[in-house]
Amino acid sequence: MVTTLSAVPTLTMYVSGIMLFTEETLGEMRSRQIDYLVGTPKGKLRALEQQLLDKPWKQVREGVEVKLSQDPQELWVLARSAGRQDKEMAIRR
Image 1 (tube, rainbow, N blue to C red):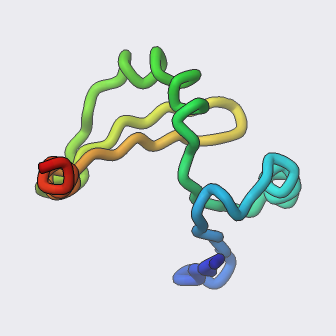
Image 2 (cartoon, rainbow, N blue to C red):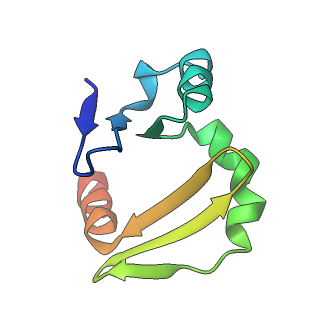
Image 3 (tube, one colour):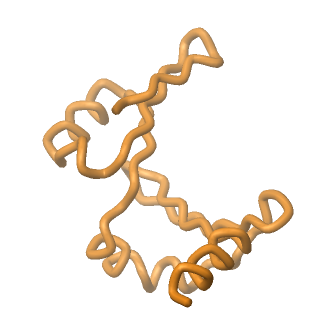
């Protein structure tokens, strides 16, 4: 499922799960300058791990922190939340 957000009349952002878009599709969206937000596979996160380790956590709201890393084409956002951590621990019990 793709969700289109259009809070700003000239901005369209596509939000989706990672399995819906291929690198080819993402490349086409980049060439058209379409903004998008997708989940990142763990393999790709491992490639970005060192860059992200060097960045500080920034609180964006109570209980939610992010790390940002940018390359020429994309902005990577690593997020963590206390609520999500609690949920993960409860599932594992």
